[in-house]
Each structure stands twice: as structure tokens, then as C-alpha cells.
Image (cartoon, rainbow, N blue to C red; front, side, top):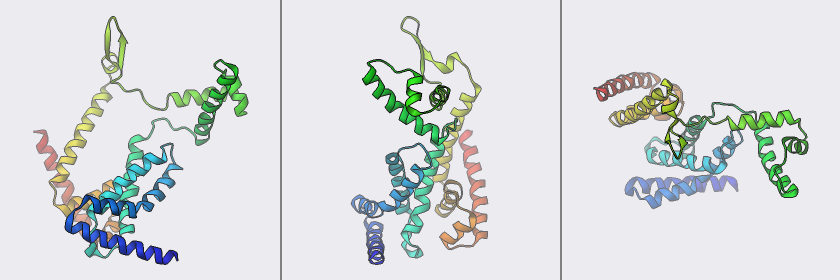
Length: 258
């Protein structure tokens, strides 16, 4: 029975992909997303157990990867769409997690205790009609009060404070924190953001196949051998395209700085 369902899914996907190539219909694309949503659910479920991001957020990010796969899939290559789409879905989620990654790594056990502690604190506050002490919360969690304090401090310091946050009072007016605490790294961050925009603009100007190879290698973390197999070309061709593409990108980005 599962084999028949899998076969029907492949046939339905193929028919819709053929229709989408002809019409470019958003309705057809949405049907493809719904039909292959199980691929996204599987990846989102796996990564939700590896990080603190919500399952729903990972589903949305994975769907973006699925849509990119739909846009780029070439029926004439003869590849299975599911095999083609998975690296896009996984890559989109991985890059999202890298961008969202905290500078402070907290043990999973502590994250679990922190969530439990919040619930317990609310329950105790309702029962005691006051804010519970750290010792009271720690006693319910069955951990030392010192460990609960460390957990709270770690979670408070987990996310870096934005240098754009306003600081000051009503009388003197507020100013961005960056103006009060100058940090050359903040300027470096701004420059990195500008470089990213220029890179995106330069990528659009590349020849389509070269751009596709660069995205596979650098955005989706595929090896050159895996790219060659996926695109049905030689590893040597992939290597040459990577070198040529990087050279062109350097020239284009240098031109945008002039």
C-alpha cells in the first residue's frame, strides 16, 4: 500500500511540475507545496529536536526551500523531485539556524529546566500570591538554588543586546546604544550586511548554470562531486565553473565599490 501511495505521489508531482513549467501558475505551485509538504515536516521535525527554534518557524523556512526547489527543478534531468528538493529544504533550514544561532550555547537540559521553571514560577505565584523565590522554584525542580540562578543568568545573556536599542530618559532624550558605547565591530557588521546585498546583486548577473553551481556548493553545502551527479556533468566542469564564477563575482563586486 505505501508503495502505491508513493508511486501516486510521484506521478501527481510530475504532472503538476509539467503544468507549472508551462503556465507558471501560483495555484499549481501551491498544489505542489501541499503535495510535498511531508518532506518539509520531516526536516522540520528533525531540526526542531536539535535546536531551540519552534517547529512552526522551521516549517515556514523549509517551505521556502521547497518553493525554490520547485522553481529550479528540471524534469528533463530524470531526477526524483523528492531527492532534488531535500537539499534545498535542509539548506534553507540550516542557514536560518546559522543566522539565528546564539553566541552563548546553553545545554539542552538547562533549556528544558528553564521552560519548566517559568511554568512552576507562575503556578507558585498564583498559589502564594507573590513572586516565588529562587529557592522555592529550585525545590520544585529538584535542583540546587545556585544552579537555577545560573540557568536564569545564562538564558538572560543568551541573545546579544542590539546596539540600536534606545538608551536614555525623557528629559535628556534617548540615543542608540551604539553612540554611547562605540564599537568598531558594529561598523564591521554593517559593512558585512552591505557586502551581502552586493553579493546577491552580483549573483543575479551570472550565467544561470554557473550561479546554480555556486549556490549548490556555497549555499547548500554540497560537495563538487554531489553537484556533478545532480546536474549530470563532470566534477572537472563543476570545479571550472566554481573558479570562473568566483572570479566573475570578484570583478562584479569590485565594480560596485567604485
